[in-house]
Image (cartoon, one colour):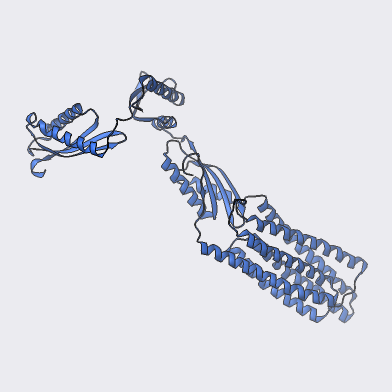
Length: 483
């Protein structure tokens, strides 16, 4: 926002080295995850072949998919951290969400296969299992690796918000519990084989169903979150927090629309705010900057602010008139209003270009009058005094010359005003296309102040009569001994 009705983008400052450090740490975490997945797959393939356990086979398939997911995560993290370009104006953050969605799909496919195979073994005894204490110990080691890896991934995902790393962390946290369930199943089968309890052999298939249940539960949660991210569903409560913060921002009447979308670890926020229609461009700009700062304190975001001028609920008559004039690009001053014959009587001064004809100036005054009556009181009386926007004001040399001439003229009046001793420090300046003059005049310090006031008023009248281009003269009287 750089003015009412315009747009701006705000990028919270973040050092380049901090971005590079975050990207490097995320890539290292993803790469470590790939290495851990390779080790786990190797161990589980070994014990699955040795034991013929469906529970271990399901865990092996789960880990193979975890390896695929870890590779996808590593690649997606590398791509997601690339800056925005001409083809990807919002950056590449959605790659992480897509990666997490693919991982979810792979998890659910694995769960379906495990359920199918488990029922085949439970109902038709289609496989023979060879449980061993060695397999149980190796699974315990695998569970420890899963625990350490999930904690490391979760820490990095929380430090640098990353859906892909978070999905990976969820996968390995489920591996901890699913491996524990498999350990229970194969331990039961090992005890059944050792002590001749046939029904304990079924615990392996039951454990596999437990693994499938965990996968479906976690996968459904992850799938919903990643689908929400891909479909630009606003994070729960974030929109309300932003609206509340914007509404409390100084210079903002209220937030009219707030839209939030997420791409990777960045948020994109579009906000429409209303400001008083009498606010200047600088005031609207300041309100927009304040909104950007407020939102940045809530969430790291790229913010676009659109500003709409609105009438305040408690807008007074003069603010309304100024807003009407501002909308037409007109300058007004000296506003007054009072009741006259049971009707509202409004007076104001309208400044028009000094090159305008009376016809053109009157047309603009009439249009302004119609708008005032329409938005205030149709029965009101409006009297508009028309004056030139300003006289042609010369450069610095002409100002100096005018200053010298005014000083000479004032001192030439000493023969008429014997009380006047000397006039000096004459300054001429232009303000709002008007020439303003100030000076010091020395007089007898014993003169009563009422007499001094009459003299200065007379001097001001004489100067304005002699120099009609001067809009206002201000005389500072002082005693002779202090001049």
